[in-house]
Length: 202
Image 1 (cartoon, rainbow, N blue to C red):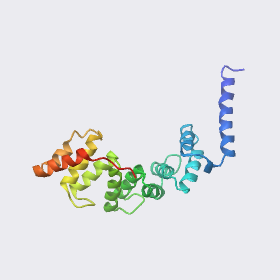
Image 2: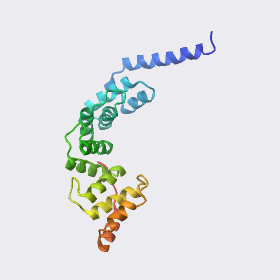
Image 3: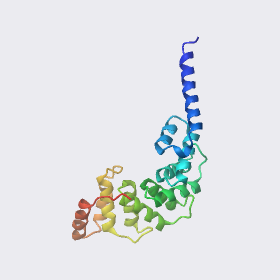
Image 4: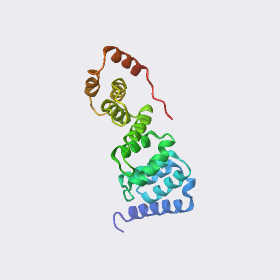
């Protein structure tokens, strides 16, 4: 017997056992966490099947995960239309990761017709739940008047929220740039609003 013969059989038997277990337990009976565990172990097709069953049953986290698989082309062929389809379902159900990623698809026109108004809408939904990337992108759109009316106080507010959550390392430069276009009364009022604000999860 080779030095690693027994170990190799143990690994193979473990894989065989997991395969048998998956074949005897329907995907619908498994949880989102089960799908994550399968994915981490390298059982990508099985994880996909678990998430698909859950997504079709309305699980917003599984819907988001499917969207991300199609978005990134991980374990499946990259397909922005399918990514948008699943992101939309998860976003409507309140998953803020899906809201942000759906916004980026509308922003770029990937898998959907480019619609900056829709991009702003979904960035805002994600931002309101506390997603710092959504807050930063919302601030940019408000500063530039892209997809929404230009609004410097609201732009300052979202830059400040992103900064409070250490989004990238902007060091307040974007916020200060916007503040130069605001009155002192607007700055003080917005700072007060930002200090008192708390995200609300859907």
